[in-house]
Length: 171
View 1 (cartoon, rainbow, N blue to C red):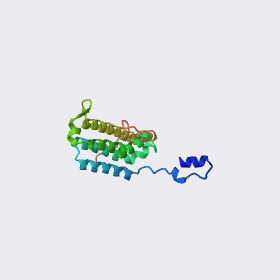
View 2: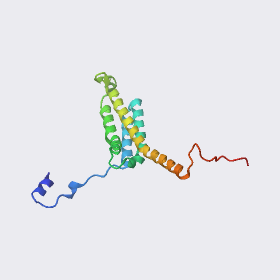
View 3: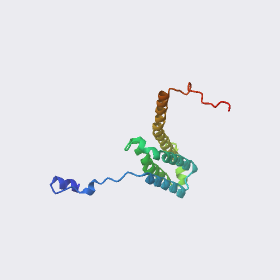
View 4: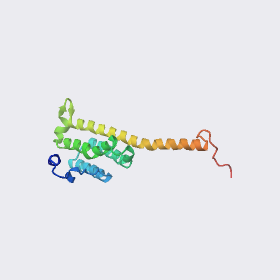
């Protein structure tokens, strides 16, 4: 606000620090965030049903990271992967893990649902979403393979069903 007011009043150049945008998280930052999630689970001795779902999400994120650039810089999918690793997943777990374990796992808090069941539903949603994003990232390479195969077929005139016999005869 001070910078805006200074510019309005003609008080000089804007403060450069006001325009600094933090760099986006790197793959290393995202992996570090996932490692913190694992540490949180170990420390809290989280139930196996939670650990297995978190492992699935983390595995999918790790598989997606090398392909995230194919989704497009600043894409919604790329943002979702980063936000899941650094915000959505840790926040969901922290909310659950702050509760007393017995209470969280047995006391209904939303109709018949316990905190554990609500967390599992959230983790399932994150898992399905990360799977869909990984599929989208891989689809680009799959489409490139299909296009290249069609190019080769057009170039050399042999389809897989009617190409030359490449088996070796008797020596």
